[in-house]
Length: 157
Image (cartoon, rainbow, N blue to C red; front, top):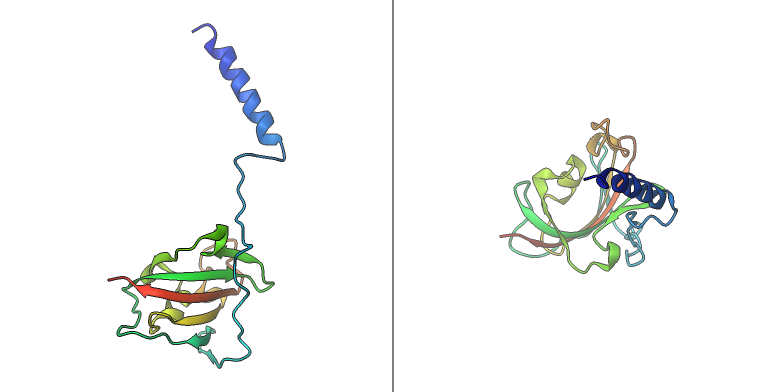
């Protein structure tokens, strides 16, 4: 018991010194080296909706069912900012599996952009702040236009 206080102080000092080092073992950055280039939007027709959402449909997909707001889907996506900075991607860190999403839990612009697609559907969405994170004062992207390249892998059963 006598040694527990000095031991605790020493441990806190060691952790503090390690945390100050530039090679923080607890920091992590995604590897975006395997993320595909943005989809080509010059060769496809664009749809501009009255709410500001822009949709480039590269492929409608095929299959019996279309995505509804109630569906769970497996998809690949890359989220970029206007300057091309990649924020998130299912391809990060050399992942080979799509992510599963409940469509009703996504931001409004994402939801509106994928509803109606089928398996294999491929779109680029340009989402204005009002349909993205504009309503969330805590989000660092509340003032940003969001760019999503999306490939629908499958609709969950």
